[in-house]
Length: 217
Length: 190
Image (cartoon, rainbow over all chains, first blue to last red; front, side, top):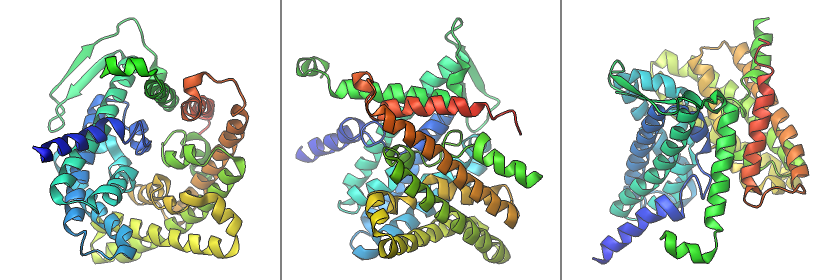
């Protein structure tokens, strides 16, 4: 019972109190770059989840064998290995997604989120909590990424398009905002504006008066 | 001519920070003071060029002949990590003031997406050695240019009456958006 409560806390930490994007501002490069379409955002979230899960498990397993002085290079090699595996798999099974995420799949290696979790959590905890931590952190990352890309795609194209990553001929499109279209949001400048607003909303949420806090919870 | 357009394209049109979104952590993190921003930019240029040269050579003279080019990412990241260690030791010994100012961000160059991003781009686009060097230098110059402008504006915006919740990071992103908009103007040139 006590264990369960702890796991719930780990998830909550990942999604809310230590959200990798909103609170620690980690992993902003992929957030800005792949959020033009929801499809890409979902693909990126799953890629990050897979890498984080595998690297957290591995690092947690080898944490007692690794000498303290050279732990960071070892962690990086572990992460780079899994990223190479995931990239090859994506190239083989979801070529279109691989194409549109482009350079940001290899760059998962240097996503501070993954190395950060390896250093801060997996290298100090057992395997099971590390798995839960990977789930919580990638949930936190994925949710923000998907919401952010939803906003950007709807505003910039008026529509939402989902397609099957394994077979891109299957797709459907929803038209949501027939009157409003700001194509700027699909481009770099719009990404920065949207991110600025998102951080401002987060700041407002964190500094809200104490009274409201109870109601929100 | 092709080299010139590659270079200017890398500096202005597909700027590393404003249109490729590489290295955003350091872009926001060290740009509060002009002095630190410039120091960081030169550290990035130095590591970027060295890393591009070394990874290009290793990829073309070692990995391809051995047929293990799928290991390029692992090799690239190791090269970069080693180089950063070297730059850190160099600065600590010869320019300790700059070393103190850059503080936490120097080891973070290892995880600066710009470095690995450029090394990977060189390999993916099959650049020749000269092209790879020109591309790396120009990406670095683009980084310096944007960092310089951005940190200058941020020093001013410290004292500006910004809405309460936009203070700090949010307004920095809005600012980056305006700058990205300005850099669109270069889009038609090449």
